[in-house]
Structure formats: C-alpha cells, structure tokens
Length: 217
Image (cartoon, rainbow, N blue to C red; front, side, top):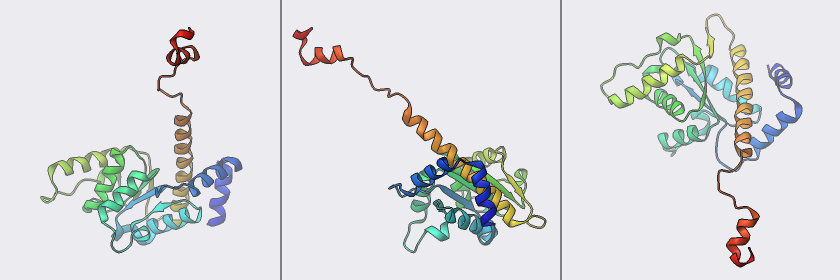
C-alpha cells in the first residue's frame, strides 16, 4: 500500500514541486493543519478515518483527527474550530449516522462557511440520504446552517464507498492522492496571491522628491 501511494505521487508531481510543498509544510511555524478529517466516530473512526490519518501522517503532512490531536483538558469547540480555521482542506466522511451528530454538522458547516475545499467520501450512504435530523435542541439558525452545508456537500464531486463490496485500502489510496493534489493546488493559489501586485499606492521618484523638498522641482 505504501509503495503504490508513493508511485502515484511520483507520477502526479515533479520531484522538485513535491519537495517544495513538503518542505514548506514541514517548516511552517503556525500550528495549522493541512487536512481536517470530519467524520462520525461511531461509524468510521476505526476504519477509513484512522487509516486516512495514518497515511497522510506517514507522508509528513499534518492531518487533524480528534482522537489523535486532542488531549485531556483541551476545550472541544475551541480546538476543533481553530483546526478548521487553520487547515488547507477538509475531508468529510459521510456515513449512515453522520447527520445524528451535532459536532459533525457543525464542523462541516464551518468548513463550508470558511470556503475550504472539502472532499466528500460517501461511505455506505447516498448523498440524497443526508438530511438534518429533527431535534428541538438545535436552534433553527443552526439547523439552517447545517442544511446549507449538507446541500453544498451533496453537489460536490466525491468518492463513493460500499464497505460490503469495496476495499478500504482502495478508498484510502484514492483519497490520499486527491488530498495531495488538492494541497498543491492550494499552495499554488497562495503563491499566486503573494505574487500579485500590491494594491497600495506607490509614489514615483519625482513625487517622492517633491515630498522631501518641493524646491527641488
């Protein structure tokens, strides 16, 4: 499995570009994550979520998975919201009981509101089956947020997986390849923004001389 992923990466990236992104990610000072893994623990933590985390970590990327990156004493919403805000992309692992979790829906909504690129994995569930479960404890404003996020996810191209027929290693391998390609796209977009001309007003040399000593003009 490790060897096949490495071969795919070599085919997808040039040696120079791959080293550039991994070096950049590895030397950052900010406590940000590259990938936030959004999932329902009771459904997928011991399968696709953990497998995906392990493979991304072995590639020296910085994935976030709650049981891997949180420790006793961490404030739940504070830690998770910070991880989502600082991440490059998200992976949403949808499963049969996903929509029963307030935390899953909150994470998804926040990723969508922050315009993060989200890669959906529809695991044992169809997009049309994803709907917010009626719960009086959820304020109407929150339910609306969750519905909007789910609708956006439904119309995002993703991966479909049937655990009764498919192979876990295949879906993880495909997801890892997509994640790496997406990270490179995000890095390229950031570089392009940095290279854009500044919008700040700049003085010509003549104008600067006039500001220093109008008598010289």
